Each structure stands twice: as C-alpha cells, then as structure tokens.
Length: 170
Image (cartoon, rainbow, N blue to C red; front, side, top):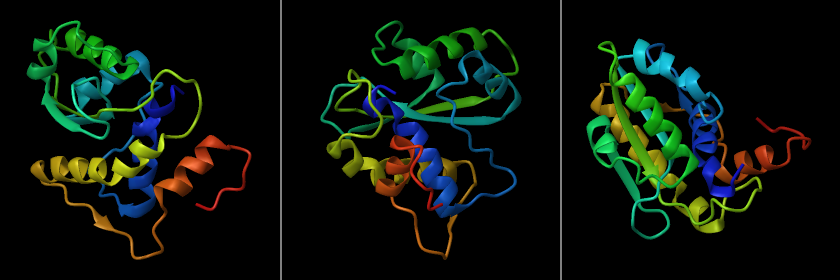
C-alpha cells in the first residue's frame, strides 16, 4: 500500500471488530475491487466510501462530498483512491439505477512511500474518521452499537495488517 492510502482498509476492520453490524449494512474493503465497485453503486441505495483525499488542509482534515460535488471537480484528483472512485462515479452516473454515493475522505501525510501502516499523524486522527463515518450512517437511519467486549485499537489493527505473519489477536 501507499502508506496512508490504506486508511480505508484499517477503518473497515476497526468497525467490524468494534461494532455490531446490522443485517441492512454491508461493510467491505473496496480498495482492491476496481471496477467491481460499480456493482455496489448500482445495487445499493446508499454507498459510503471512505478513503484518502487531496483536499487542501492539514493532515487529518476530513471532508464529506456527494456524487455531484465529486464530479464537479473533474480531473483534479491526486490520490489513487480518488481517481478510481471518480472514474467509477463518472461511468455509473450514466446508469439510472445508481445509488446515492457519499465520499468521506481524510487528508493524508504520506501516500508516496510504499509501506504498510499509517503515519503517526494520520493514526492520531482515525477516531475522527470513525466519527464522521458513523454520523453519515446515522443520516441513513443506521446506528451502530459498540460491542461490549474489549475494543480492538487502531494500533492493533494496523500492526496485524502491516505484519501479516504475526499472530492475530482478533
């Protein structure tokens, strides 16, 4: 992964490990799905995509944009995540059965270095990204309940992804 570019994958695992997921919610890590994402855009009523963004601002700045807002910016996208999502939205926007798509993005520190893990500054802001995602879910009538068990930290999740041969604790 391109360092902070993987924050969406870590967010998905964090939510899966720390919240009860209702039957009317599908949570996927779509960073490697490519054109397969179009299926979700066309089959679901609401799609929330979370990833890195290239908006102006300090590391950790969070932005939420609708399909219309994303497409209005044209080819100004800079991260791999944004380019692929914008391309999928452009293609799917011609299809009448496309669901409502909301893009929640965070300004990363490093999407150049090829390495697993997150920079310390992005890791520090991940709870804000969880909060923004949960708020967007609530707008759609989905309220996630925390699991009562011991929570799994972002540090634990990142470490497990960054060292896939290490024993898993979740």
